[in-house]
Amino acid sequence: MKVKEFMTTGIESIDHKRSVYHAVEKMVNRRIRSLLVRFPGKEREYGVITARDVVFKVLAKGIDPKKIDVSKIASKPIVAIDKNTDFKEVAKIMEETNIARAFVYDQDRIIGLVALMDVMSASIIARARGEYVS
Amino acid sequence: MFLEKIFSKGKKENQVIGHITKQIKLLCTAFGFFKTALETDNPSLMQQVMDIERAADTIRRDIISRIYEGAFLPYLRPDLCKFVEVVDNIFDLLEDTAYRYLDLKLPEQLRSECIQVAFLNRRISEMLLITFESMIKGEDLREKILAIRIYEKKIDDIKFDLIRDARKIEITNFWDGEILSQFLSCLTSISDVIEDASDYLQVIHLSMK
Image 1: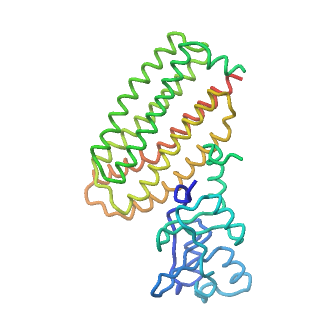
Image 2 (image 1 turned 30 degrees about the vertical axis):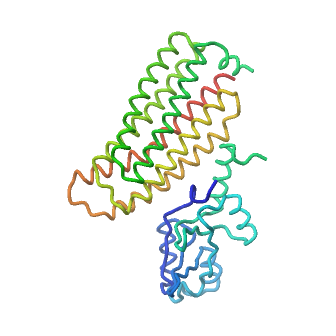
Image 3 (image 1 turned 30 degrees about the horizontal axis):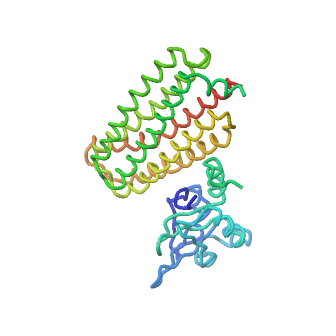
């Protein structure tokens, strides 16, 4: 089963210059755990900020989230996979890189996101469809 | 096995099973047409969804008649008929969605999400067919029904995004807004009815144990 079949397409992004507080607001409002961070440049550059980054790199250290930019804590570069990648391959990449979500690209554009839950769901569906038979 | 006794013996039973399979396969075809029509903005292809609905209606009447002419044990008949009726409701809802589409100009910013829902609707209908075929073989349905629920949940998630995006669109004419709202509502509620159909398969499956 290909990633494009079961990815989340509604990706939320934030400019690298915005504050971490702004990112938190966005995550809370949308009930999501990560945001794509947009950086300027010739080639479109992306980073990612997760709830984990906010908690460990800002809140736990007593830093005021309004006084720190997203760019300071965002992880860069992001792990991105082609839209035609099989979910089995995604699971391997996630295990190897120790990440819980990966962005999906089509040519050079980010078009979606797959999280661990998506990998689990896709795997159940593929089994039910008789695609993964060991 | 008891299931095999019920499902593989008897000409009438086999005819009914064949017709129900045909009905669900038609459903998959209709969803395929709908998705392509949405992708290509093709009204004549969308029109064919309605033609398929009429063909499916004939099959439904035929199945119900055959069941009450004596196919299957009497205690199984109401649940089988109910399943067939629920599948017919899916056709009706898909037809309503196609009608609404022909009546509106779908805002481009909503098209990709609508196509994704149409794609998932097709996938979930295929899963309904797989579940039905598994039931006939007497296999465990749990994994298939879970897959249907996962699809339904995924469509629900997209529904909330669609509603949020639709609210950003400026509506200048009441009826344009009303029809767009009905289209989105129909498109995203089809999976709920497919989930209901799968629940009936589970009931039939359990009642035969």
